[in-house]
Length: 310
Image (tube, rainbow, N blue to C red; front, side, top):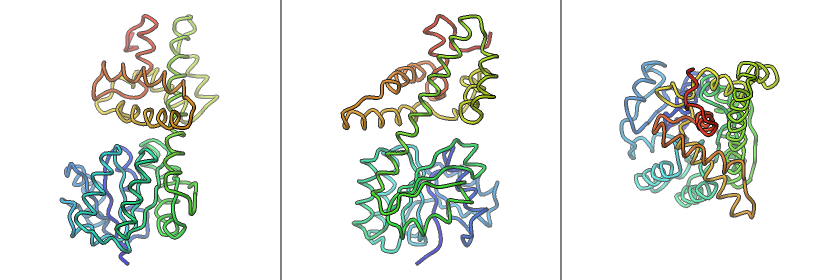
């Protein structure tokens, strides 16, 4: 059974996660890395060291056969499905291989992919993570691992102490439970961004000013909430060339959450409100739209400019 790892996907999270795996794990180097835009793989190899990163130019049978564990960390459901279908088509017999998916996708998609891999003879583990790109860089993510105990035992040494600071283990549970938790968990982040946006706009409109509310957030809620508050006040939500949490990804997560709620006979009204604001962010900023751009939309609804540059 090969101990080599193939990493697929170098988005905002994947870059930091794969970097830590290459540098901090006990894997025999090099870590094989594939990304659809090959320049990202080469940039990582140059930054980390070409002795610890092997750039895979094409996701073909040769690359798949070398790997015992294949990680995917991709932007959406379609990308993960397309990637796994490509792999199964290239190597129909996946016996002895473990697939670990750290993408944020719908639980139904997770189930579909798990069945695809098992049918081909491989093992599947859903392992989404909580935390932003800065936590991925620092190796302090929270992993959520769901699947067979044996698969978890095989993958967890690459998480805790390498990519994550702690893990939530769902041993011998359906992999879809991990992505269900991920989708529900992400709604908390979306909702706090919505609440921060509304709070800062109210602070400005009442004459209190955002400075004092931001100071309160820094003292009362250090961490994720204070971070998003600071980004809003500093205008970071509209100044970035590349969004930290792209609006399309945020809307994808919101859509999955609302679909889960509908199928379960409930609603997520806060998520529905945030999603309407995200839709407007996309209209205004296009591909550069960032999730905390909700603040700009709430500002506009209150008669202010999208940007807080004044």
